[in-house]
Length: 417
Image (cartoon, rainbow, N blue to C red):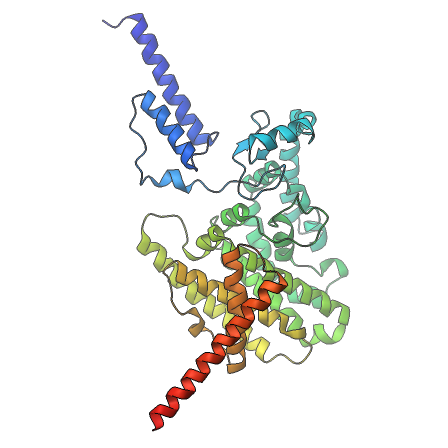
């Protein structure tokens, strides 16, 4: 017969196990880093449970961390306020700073309620088709903090973005060309430049952002099969607008504006492809342990990229002078293509994506001497290259291409002999 002492011990053990499960399931203690894994395994061992095996995918897949609400360090919000559960931090030090001098101590009692209100209202505004586009998107900064953004996602933010991106693909040209001043905007541009911009706090007041918010982008891409194609096709549709004859001739100011919008979204994709996590979400698809499944997904995605990029290349090649000033959009299209090619090789998906692109000789030279060194250099650095770094990389690529042509010429002469 079990004694009361044994019963109490069993109950305590059962409660401890339940608590450990709750910790893991609520991600109060995120097992991403090695110390976290060791900590959980130590607790499991103390409770008589087997440790997680080294190959257990769960332990290394919880990487979708929010940004820090104090310093805005990307994908680092491992700690969160235990009271409101709506403020996220990269470290206990940042959490203490936010509490003591950042104002969270005073805001905390109402913070969850505020996040609920901001998140729900922002999604409602985005879905309000009685408003013109600018007014639907003008308050996206309300989702800068991670708590409000989380509430927005729970209330359909991702589906709303997909719907608005599809609207851009179908109607952005008409809005810019024929619409009222409040209609001349792009939903995809707002999303990329506001919701997903990195360094939201560290560069407040600046219109330049060197990184994307990897976690937000990854979660969107994985939210549905339609998510990435909707975003990508909307952005390519925006690239075509400055090439439209009516837009070009109607108003030089409008043409400059839409050209800037197109540049912004292509630059945004350069940041997305620089991020390894977002690139994997795009090219390897949903998380799975089956490598063959991921590679097959990637091959389909590569064919999709070629089929959507080639019409844009053709349009840019045939664009009249002035439509793409200094070939900026063309350069960005090729740089994004070079980054896709690099990631495809890196992930074992495709060794020669460039061969699928219908480039003329001049475009091929631009691709090899400008796009490839800039795209690959940016990925390797993890951030935009400085002007000096870019010049060095392009000079090196041009020298290599020149040497390659000389070698081919010499080989041709030998063969003729």
